[in-house]
Image 1: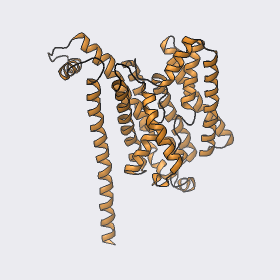
Image 2 (image 1 turned 135 degrees about the vertical axis):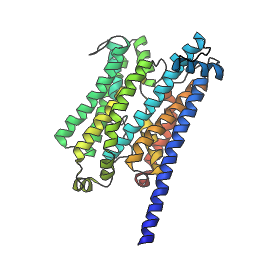
Image 3 (image 1 turned 90 degrees about the vertical axis):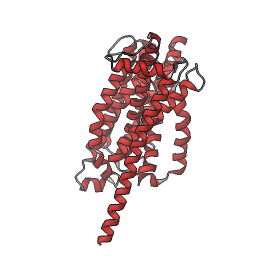
Image 4 (image 1 turned 30 degrees about the horizontal axis):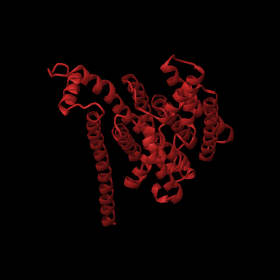
Length: 356
């Protein structure tokens, strides 16, 4: 008995060490790629110019030479999109992981339950009809996209309250709304002028071009506000992975966890996509890779999904900026090249060991 206990403790220590190594590796990867990304681009800047510009901004009391051109390129063009890539990747990945955990379906993500389609419709209304509830100009599009993303969650919740808050009801309601909002967006594209259509299509590509620091602050604030609440449900998600009956007998209010997780994931997703446009598959790819490496314990799965999602999207955006520079390929297109094959792989294999 003593040997069995010691063996169990040794196995647990190894598993925990592996998870810690994954976290450290992902953090190092994010920092390394961020440094590479801020250096690479169509404008040729030396590493010293980049370093001096960052130091001059962060530590103004240190005297270093920094040109206005280098400051504009590094601080106003490259760094905001790099930080937004980290925030967007982390937010979309953790939203996908939370949704998959609450609905016990490996193919669920903010995209597949209609949140992304709803934000696209909201943005399209602003660009084609110039109509919206809040904001003007650029922020009319942003606020419309955000509000329609939140509206999608409330519609799903309303349907679930009528039919019962089960995983199946939430998924089917989300899929139905996804097709509804996609159809409405297609109609707006059909009646739009050439200029309006071009604006809608460009937004739907999903791009970090033109990201401003204020965009990063808003998206980051929403993400950081919602993340602790999602982490709070990690034990409940672990119990629900064993089945609703077991979770309920353990004292978990499964309906409450599902609804609150959906609302939190929606706020994060809408708060990101309203600035970036459609970036699909991050919420599917990152959580599944993490499950394959460290397992399905949501105490580690949620934060590790954040880190891997941030790393993957940062790599994708850097690739899109540099692969055919000075032409910039939208990050949504680059990530689709990664996400579609991975999604098909999951559909074809349906490997249950992902949920171990």
